[in-house]
Length: 112
Length: 122
Image 1 (tube, chains in turn yellow, red):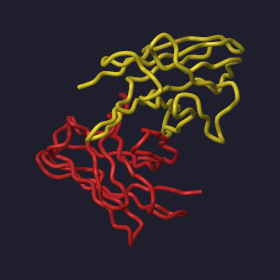
Image 2: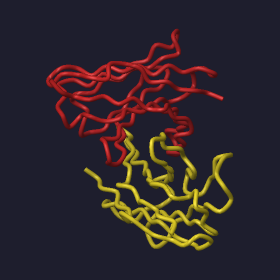
Image 3: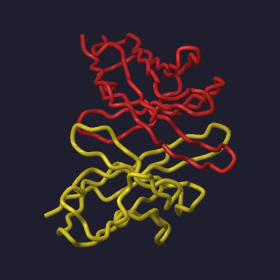
């Protein structure tokens, strides 16, 4: 079973910049994996912020951006706000005869 | 704006079958893929499977032997059945709409239900 790995936790100061990454046990993450990034706040359902590597939803703040970085998918927050404190999950697509998706374990982002 | 709502028993006995339904409102179930995802308390997300409105399915290999997802287009609903449950199946279960292109892998889980907690206990 493929494993998708994220940093368990990160801390950033308000106004700062932070990059979260997402790696696959099957090798380098490329656009073929169509990486998505989801945000989940306590007691709420997840919501997708970034899909297909770098596309944004209408509700995604401009300070969030997605990319590929060093064989991983990456989510960068520039000018972090207190309301960005949340859990962030990446999601990778594994195609084939029986396509499936695998979530990363999640990164708990603390704004302090 | 499409809305999704999960419904079903909140308590299931070990070895029995978990059954949930997702009702889609504000949009048609046609022409989309629909997925189930779960999250054990305090843990991460796990993709369970999807169904296309036409009925084709794909499941997480680790759950495939126990999972069935079905669709009722006339009711704008799709359903999840998970058999032989154990305490490890205790989780919040979410349904979601997926914009998916099987040729390119383009994926966007763009709408989610609020989730429903299912506890497996005797």
